[in-house]
Picture 1 (cartoon, rainbow, N blue to C red):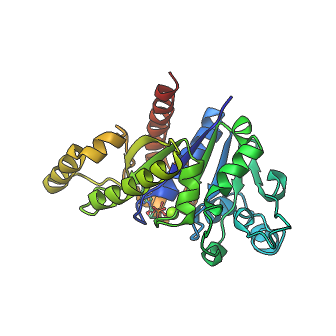
Picture 2: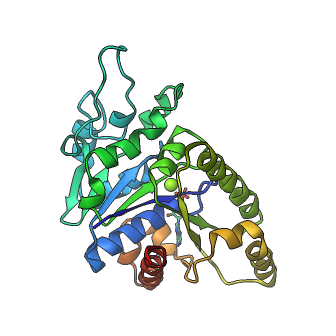
Length: 279
Ligand SMILES: Nc1ncnc2c1ncn2[C@@H]1O[C@H](COP(=O)(O)OP(=O)(O)O)[C@@H](O)[C@H]1O
Ligand SMILES: [Mg+2]
């Protein structure tokens, strides 16, 4: 088995990256028997908050995982080497991964990511890939999902360098076209510099409401742009589901009848799209 690393990315915030990342991951794990590792590279660490809450690990996260030299967070991957002579080795998976259930693990994020110094020699941007490769994590997981911040940063670079695919959640609005151009530029630049060979899995519309005539127009214009055609559009989308926004049962899509159908269809299409690249 060679697992696939997928970045959930968009240069815009609030487009449903985190919700889709958790939604697809949880569904593939709990209903399709896939092994999933979530890596939270967003300093807003919403994926972590959501999963920690879902698995009643708030206490552990706050008291044991979130800080200190033995913390279980992605921060451990980005620590700087102390001296030239003393190389700081990357941590072992067992030291930093949090076991959620039989099919799901999490490498938690932390707000402290905002404190990481700049990546002077470009080595930080390669840490996630190194961690995955050194520990053969692609043999242990069917999918490694990376939740990315909506910024051009060492974290987006680290995610893209580590990934086989990227998936772009997007809302149908006029800023989407601008956002997608910026994202494509970031990826093309990295591909030029590093030859990362990342492939587009597609764009997924999120939080779709009833389509007015204007929205349909916007959608048509968007889909006819060259960049969008290059990346490709998922046929399935997530509808605006208010329970997911305010629901007492957290923000996991499969928990709500309305969003469960969406996520089921998206997961099937997700697996088909990955398979197409295999042949
Ligand atoms: N399908 C949906 N229906 C209703 N609300 C949603 C849906 N998907 C996401 N949301 C809500 O929209 C907000 C932004 O989503 P989020 O996944 O956090 O976006 P991002 O990670 O891109 O910033 C959150 O409050 C989330 O609960
Ligand atoms: Mg997010």
